[in-house]
Length: 230
Length: 389
Image (cartoon, rainbow over all chains, first blue to last red):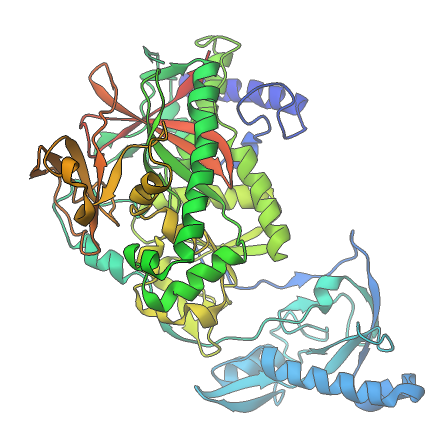
């Protein structure tokens, strides 16, 4: 115990030293790193890598520049707002439906899809690799509709399921949930929100990397079988 | 350059646990060894190691430029023909590199000699960039080392900065990190790079090499089916290019770290090419392809024969006056061999000492010192910290 207390004290001193030099780059002729934040290098947990799924992030106002965006639940909604640019609405709607096909959340079973999005809220889509279930597009978000080359349009979804954190909220294809309920139609959003979403992938195969390691590991005369680096 | 015995910090093993340094003892043998340290002068570091490291790196880049522009050399380097385009494009696009480590023979005087360049998958990074740094800070604060003791080690600072540049280059805010299963050392190295990336504002996801998937859309995926668009891989290019998923690399469109052109620098065919191009350079050892040794060298002198690709110091032979004797067995060598003039590692208190000189992109960033009981092959090396005084 004494040992560990001692080492903690030593580190506290170092942290004190570090706090005095926040520039991050050595200001003296020192040839070593000056700005290591020890508390951030601590690992209180056992080293245990996990692939973590996309967690939903509640979008809040902060920092970066925002732009206005509107949500429409039908093409007519949009045209009512832009009577002089109805063809723009047509194009935005078309973009959103195409994006939905490409990026929408998808499930292997109707049950799983309805559990998240509610009864009768999902459709079947046949792909090369079999049938999948996707929620219906519940609205589309547009921004800068009248701008010649910088307009955005993306599909939005909502849930009617009592089990879902998306219930009565607008959610993007990649799981970003907007604050407020679905009656809210005008938002200020950051550029990340408007960026095209990644295509949803179905993994067909794993294990296409690593065969060299399997082959070389079976060679057993080395006293150590460790790093594949050097 | 001296080897100085030193009192280990009390309770350092527990501290290692707190910081996630789990491979300080490997295969029942100590790996991190702070019972001694190496001491250099600033002139030794700057003139004999730092400057030559920067220069050697530029010489290696010049060789890469020659190789990507020559089908004959690409063949010589055993780059599979199907991937010449991939390697060439990564070079012509100037795909950014992160780091590399030159292994140097240096005794404290005379020019350091390049043994090889670990440009693709260098390890011992965490113990260099962070753990030996912490050792110095603590030993100085404890009064064991002089207040003005320094260390050639700006690795962490430079790695964080470089990740920021790479994020800017590829316009990314997330990357995947990957290494093989069942090696705590590699996982620890990759975790350290994830920590550095995080300091640069990059979110990291981890996936084991063996778990990488191929999606119907042609992209690689992690276990959550998320696409892998930008990936650091602690996995050699010579394996990647020859494995099943190597066939679909082009369509997967991943921005890899290290980039594919590092397959040329990490290849031991680099050594004869360097000698061809810069023969007589003070930091180079004479080197030839094994099937192309000049007549006078064939039957005289002392040469070390190494496979183009190898790990763990496997498949090394010594050739003395034309007579070859095997030093270490192994599964490598089918792609060919090179020979390099034998240059002994300096011996300090019975230990053969090797300097690892780090670069982040093209900037020298610090050194690591490893000791081995064996004169040529590195098997159970120990890592010792160093200071500048």
